Every structure is written in C-alpha cells, then in structure tokens.
Amino acid sequence: HRQVPEMEAQRELAKQRCAARAVGTDPDVVAPIPSADILPGRNRDTSVERNLKLFEEMKLGLHDEGTLTLRLKMDFDSPNPNMYDLVAYRIRYTPHPHAGNGWCIYPNYDFTHGICDSLEHIDYSICTLEFETRREPYFWILW
Image 1 (cartoon, rainbow, N blue to C red):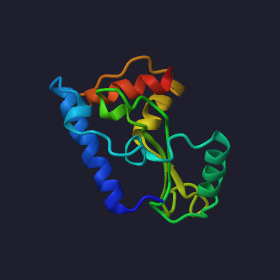
Image 2: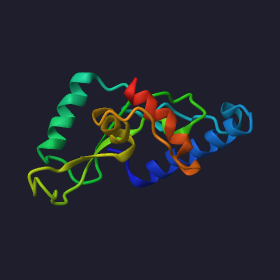
Image 3: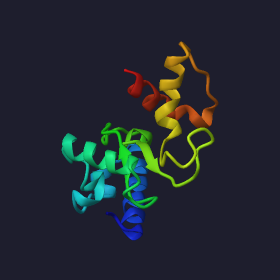
C-alpha cells in the first residue's frame, strides 16, 4: 500500500506535469518521472484477476478505509488530469442510508454521473465551467 508521503509526491508530480502540458511545455523536461512506481503508479498493470480479488476483499470489508481504491485504467498521457486513472470505488465504513452497515464500498461521483445519466436516458448534460474538464471522463466511461 502507498503511504501518505508517497501519495503527496505523486500528486505534486502529476500537478507539475499537467501544468507543463497546459502551457505547451514537455512534461518530461519540466517534471520527469523518476520511477514507474511514482507515475502512473506501481499498481496500474496489476492483472484483472488480482484486481477482481482485491475488489471482492474491499466489498467484504477486509481492508481499512482509505487503503485501497478501484481505479479505471484511462489515459495517463492526456493533458486533462481528470483522465488520469479515475477512482471508481473507495472504502468507507459509513452506514448506507438504505443498506445500513452491509455495504462498505462507495462509487465516486465522476464514475457514476455518466452511468446514471445513461440509465435515466439523459442524452445531454449541461455543466458549469468548473466541471468542463470532467466532460472527457464522462464520455470516456459511457463509450
């Protein structure tokens, strides 16, 4: 499992690389990736079988809150940081309004937004400018 200082270093490096792309600078020059363990992350190429096993363990409550997430393998070379392997599910030991204590994994809003729209037959979505960068993962998940 990744420790807090490692996560903070990963987040800072991702921000620097995104800022470089935004101004047309080569991110490999401005913020080179020192190791594949840092970005995109050492677990990105974990097998489907291992991920399914870990997800089942998450559902069963075998891991502490905040220790594991299920991420989508998206586009780490995108200039849009919202395309960097979005978190789909996280562990939260908070009673669910309908399921009570029987459920401990919760989906991320950005993961479920497009899915819910699709299930409700919503074929367009208007968003304010602060959500504009989230349009790309919204459509990526649907298509």
